[in-house]
Structures are given as structure tokens and as C-alpha cells.
Image (cartoon, rainbow, N blue to C red; front, side, top):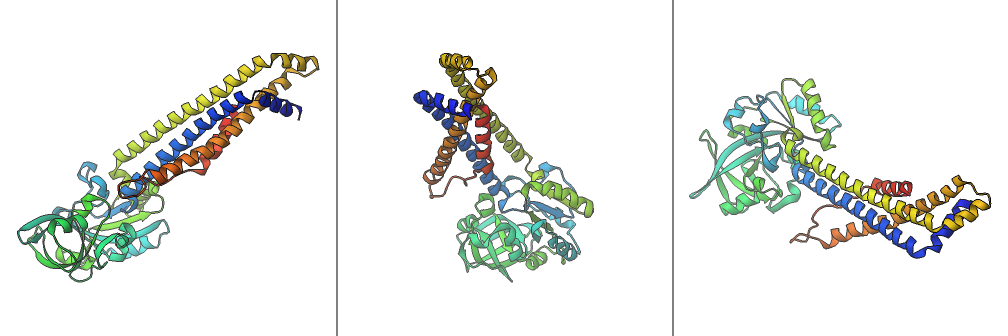
Amino acid sequence: MFEFQVALRFLKEGRMQTLLIMVGIAIGIAVLIFLNALIGGLQADLLNSTVGSSPHIVGSALEKRPPSQRGEGNRVLTREAIRGDQERPLRNWTPLVEQLGEMEIFEAVTPVIDGSGFITLGEASLPVLVRGFPLHKGDDIYSIQERMVEGEFAAEGDRVLIGKGLAEELGVSPGNIIRLRTPEEIDRTFTVAGTFDLGVQAINDSWVVLSLEKGQTLYNLEGGISGIELQVGDVFAADGTARSLEQTFPDLEWVSWQEENADLLSALSSQSSSSYVIQAFILLAVTMGISSVLAVSAIQKSRQIGILKALGITTSRVSRIFLIQGALLGFTGSLLGSALGTSLVWSFFYFVRTETGEPLFPVNISPGIFLFAVVIATLAG
């Protein structure tokens, strides 16, 4: 193709100019990819720490309460239960749990007991949140087994698991006896089977995990439960799923993590919007850079353009030469920028670590960003 050959010739004649504009494009695209991966990784890490090992939906027979009275902090939907909440335990829950467990949309379903209490050991007395559930079902949500610090992953009979921070504050270890007292002055002694670290201080400092049956006995629920906790595959589908459950099971209250974390969602949305604005300006700078070079090139090549027109080359074909020249610059520069951006991301991942040697956040490079960068840079040319 004649226009392509002439465009290549023009680029070769101005090697230094061509190299500089390619470097400029590459740097712009590299920053675009790095920023995209950085924001994506931070958001993925924030979501994982907030809802990765937490229920996405909670169903209960409780009266609906305004969001300000529901759970708060990093515990998401794990509510600070008080006795007043348990005046309406969920009865006849077994068929419902089985029905929910058969739905493919749910990755984990578990009945739970939530209750408050105090652990006493000698003169020490600490408020705790008592959580009762079938241990292996609950582990599908909270991943306690893989986060055990000491002892055994067991909570049958009078054995309990407690958070790492709570164990340290009480000075207990697996095998020690603790006394648990409920707001109704019911006292029971339990053996600490093990301690866990779920990565959230509020949980580590307050949780006592026991069997569902022991929780029902401790709070006189007579076979009832506090609620049902669910996890879905797509965390952002939780709210829509909760609304569907309200239609299917209208006698229960269904609360999604999105309802409980409106501020977090707003922050993520603002973060994404800011990222898109910055990326748009980067692409604008790349486009302006290519346009400027082509304008200068057209002026520099005015003599050659005159010769081409004298030979019968039309103005549209001459314009096509410079369009091809810009497309080649954009395409090549974007490929170089993609490689550079990927290198920057992985370098950041491997060399910037926490004090414990863990990555600050997971690498989250979307394959689509490469195609987007190449297409936009090429079209900009």
C-alpha cells in the first residue's frame, strides 16, 4: 500500500522525533495501566477484607430497624445481639435452610445464634459476642479453620473457639476453662479448644464460637435460631438477591451487606470516578501529543507533500499518509506502554510489602485495559 510505505518512510526519516513521541505514548499508557491496577487492587482488597469472609445476606425474624441501629464496622452483618432481639427467634427453620441450600446462587448457607455475654476468668470480666453455628457450615463463610492460631478446630459439647485478641486479653490458651455469663445470669463453663485470627480486630477481641445446639440451650431458644447467613458468588448481586428473597419469604427480614455498608459503596464509587477522570486526562494528553507531532510533521514535510501532489496524489491520500503515521505511533507506543505498565505493577507487587512481608494488595490487572489502551491510542493517532 503506497500510503503505508510513505508513512513508514516519514517515520524513519525523523527517527529521534518518532522515538520521543513513542516514549511519551508508552509512559502515558504505562501510567494508565498502573493506575487502573492500583485502584482495582485496592478496591478488591477492601472488598475482600469487608465481605470476603462475612455473610453477604442475613435473614431473620427480627423487626426491621433503621440502618443506624444495625451492625457497624468491619463485622458487616454480624450484629451485636441483645436479648431484646431474641424475643422473636426464627422457628421451623430447617426446611428453609435446606431450600436455600439447594439454590445454586448461594455458595454458603448456615443457621446462626447471636448473643451477648460476659466471660469471667478470675477477676477479669470481658463483654463478648457469642456466635453459635454448625462449625463446618459457618466455616464456609468465615474460613476459621485456615485461620486457626492455636489448638483444635472444634466446638462440640462444651468446647469453644475464641478470637486471638480475646485470648491474649484473658491470658488463656487451648485447654483452659472459661466461664460465660449471659444477660439472664445463666452461667456455663467451657473449655477453650482453640484460638483464631480472622484479620479484624473487632472480631478477634470479642467472638466466642460454639455449637448451634449449645447456643440454643444457653439462650433458651428451644430449637429456634437468631437468623440465617448466606454468601453469594457475586457480592454485588447480594442486594438484588435480598430483594428477591423478600418476595419469596415475606415473613423474614433480609438484609444485604450493601444496605449495611452504604458509605463503603459510596467511597468505592467516588474512587472509581476519580480514577476514570485521571485516565481520561492521560488519554487526552496522549492524543494531543500525537496530534502535535503530526501537525509538526505535516509542516516539515510540506516540500514532499508538494512533490506528491505534483505527481497526481490527491489530498485525501496525502491525509491518509499522516493518519497511518499517527496510527503506527499510537499502536507501537501503546504496546510498549502495556509492557512497561505491567512491569511497574509487578515490581510494585513484589518490592512494596507490609512489615510482615505480605503484598499491600492483590494484583488486579484487567485484560480489557490492554485492548482498550491499544485501541484508543491507535484511534487517537
